[in-house]
Structures are given as C-alpha cells and as structure tokens.
Amino acid sequence: MIFLRNLSVFLFLVSNLLVSQNKQLLYDFTEIPQSLMVNPGMETSFKWYGGVPLLSGVSGYVGSNGVSVNDIFADDGLDINDKVRDRMVRGLSTKDEFSGNLQLELFNIGYRSSDPNVFYSFGAYLEMDNISYWPQDYAVLLFEGNADQLNRRFDLSDLKARGSMVNVFHIGVNKRVSNDLTIGARGKLYSGIFDYTSTNNKGYLVNTEGSNNTFTTTLSSDMKLKTSGVRELNTAQEDDELVNAIMKRAFFGGDLGLGLDLGFSYNLNETTVISGSLLDVGFIYHSGDVVSYSLKGTASTEGIEINVLEDFADLNRDYWQDLVDEVEELVPFKKYGTGYITFRPTKLNMAIRKDFGESIGGPSNDCDCDPLKGTSASLRSRYRNSAGAHLYMINRPRGPQMALTGFYTRRIGNILALKGTYTVDKFTYTNVGLGLNVQAGPVNIYAMADNLFSYGNIAASNYASFQLGLNIISWGRK
Image (cartoon, rainbow, N blue to C red):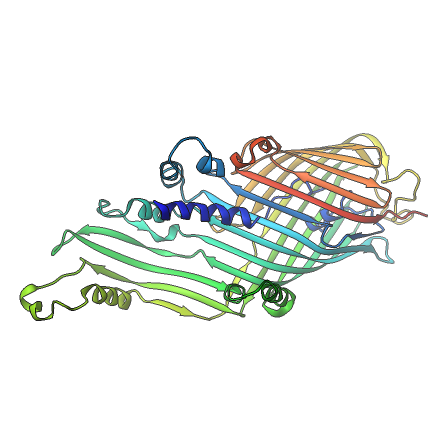
C-alpha cells in the first residue's frame, strides 16, 4: 500500500533528521572543557578556556531500538509492504522508539576567578530533540483495518510523541570546597523555537455486534496535540524568512523557560572518585504562536441507516454527510491557542572512577599547571590510567530510560588521552565507543563516536552517536 510505504518513510525521516543523549564518553573526561556541561561539579584545572564558535561542541545521536533502516529498505528481493507488515506492524510494540538529538554550541567560555577555588563558565547552545514511540494499534488499524477485528479495542493512548528545538543560554559556577569535594551548578534560560507534544492521549475504537447492522462502531477519544512555533516556521515562504523566524524565536522572541544543572565530585581516597549530576531540571512556558488541537467525546454508530418507506421522498439527501456531522457533534475536533508548559527531559549521571598507574601531575610538565597551588585545596595528581562505571538515566514519556557503561581512560604523555567505553542500553548490548582528546599546546581537539561495530553497515544499526569539538585552553603557563 502506497500510504503505508509513505508512512514508514516518514517515520524514518523524522528519526534521522532530528539527530537528550547519553554522553558517557564525555562524562568525567576532565581534560575536555565540555565535560563541565554534563557535570558542573567536575574537578577542573583550567585557568581559562574558550570554545571556537560553532565548533567547540557538536554532538548528536539517532536511535531506533526495534527496527533499522536496513530492515525495511534493504535490496533483498522482498516486497516492502511485507517487510513493513512483518517487521514493523507485527514486529514492534509501544515500547519501541524512534528518537534523535542534535546539539550545537554557539559559544562556550570559562575562566577562574580571583579566588582560585572558583571557576565560572557561560555560553549558549542550540538543541533539537525528538522521540516517538511506535503507535502499534494505529499501525494495525491502518494496515489491516478493523472490519474483522470484532471486540478488539484499538488503544488510542499508543500515540506518544514529542519534539522541540530550543536555544539554551547558561551560566555556571564550579567551586572546590575542600581537597576532596568539588560542587557545581548551572542556571539555564531556554528560548523555545518550536515544540510539539502529544503524550497524554486516551480512548479507544472498537467494533461490536450491531442490532440494526452487522457492526456497531464506537469511538471514545480524549486526545490532544499541542504545538508552538510550528505554524510560524511552516508559513515562511523563503529561506531568509525561515532563518529570520528561527533567529527571532531563538533570541527571546518565542517561548521562555528556566532550568538548573547540579553536580559534584568527591574523592573517597587519593585514587577513587565518585561523581554525579542532575541536568535540565526545568520547564518552558509556550505562549507564542500556540496552535493546539483536541478530539474529545464518545460516539457509537452502525453506519448509514435508511428507512426506505419513511425517507422515500428524500433519497437524494447526503446521508454520509449526516453521519459525519453526527459523529463530529459527539466527538468534536477543536482548535485552540491556550499556552501550555512542558518539562525538559531531566537526566541523571552517577559514576565511580579508580585511578591507577604512574602519577603524571598536571597537563604539561613544563608549566605551572596547578592554578590552585598554594591554596588550601591544591589539585590532586592525575594518573596514566582510569577505569570505572557510569549510570545514566533520562526521563521519557513512557518512563525512565537507563544505560550502564564501563569505561577505561589511558593518558599518553600530556598530549593524548584515549577513552574506551562499553555500554548496555535499550538500543544495543554491543555498544563499544572510543573518545580521543589531543592537546597541542593551547589547542584542544576532541572527537568521539559510539557503537563502532555498526559502522560497517550504518543502515543496519539501531544506534549511532558522535561528539566533536575545538577549544583554546590556558593551563596557567608562566
């Protein structure tokens, strides 16, 4: 069926174009300034740093835990409609998701205050986030219909989807409280560009035996789709109009919200560190260009009923339109513009790290690399090797998602650091990642990628992720 083929193509395009995410490679990678973004309480040794605008922090992921692009579109001689039916309509459940995230740093700057125990950072980044769960009963209804599905209730709550594009301005403070404890916090101001959400749907569609006809069809619905900014962007006629609309809403011309990040690092002993962070505890109030829709009510019908004897003189009447009008009166479709609140996808990180091997001191042997030297809270030595475990959780419409990572970090001289990870989550049990950090004088370059074993055939992968950036760092050279 052409419609179903287009539907499946649409779902995959949404998943891949809107490429928040688990940054297990970046977390606790203390040589990289952007690790402060995933734990504002990480121990820092920078005097100052400046990210290269638009290049300092670029990251994204796409994921689909139930089916891959290759499962549907591979040139394997099978009919695409058969693959859609067997691998999606009958093969997926409402727990299967299509999701993606893209972050782009506009700028990121950090500096140490006159109190060497305090480090400030500030900046802005653009973020797109999307998640859609597979609407199982909708797919069955569209693909197979409900004519032979007597007494089966098609659950309308299967539809859960939300997505947004937001510009985030942030300012953070990191304080070394003692030789063992570092804490941090970051305030965020959200400027929403667009948003859509449809996550609290209820109702059903069911066929039962009829009294005047074969079936009685009952629709009971309580559904909502809320959008903000979508109409304004959709009506832009030219590329420059679209850019202007995005820029206006990105810089306080759209929806506004507040958020908070918290984090800490604590040394249990000289070589053992526990850390944690809680990110994006916040909300956005959508009040600009709000267009929302609702479908609420209950109606039962046995189809078009004509009494030939009573209606003989009026057989030219549009009985189909009468039926439509009757259903719409009982289950009205409404459009309204009331503002609404959405909460950000809050994330939790917890980790334990064990350092071992040779002590290598600061980032460079020929510099005064310890900006806290001589204070009551001098920095501890770094070590050639680190290993540990990292737990990540994110709040999603169908409940929290978790990922567990084991990691190993190896520092080679003061120039190169490598981090390897093995992650288990709902997308894959074989996610091996690698992060590379290079410090060439003041220039810091890093690149990271997940699920490396899938790169031989990326279309067959259920998950792909990347991070990269370019910074200028001062370690306190004399």
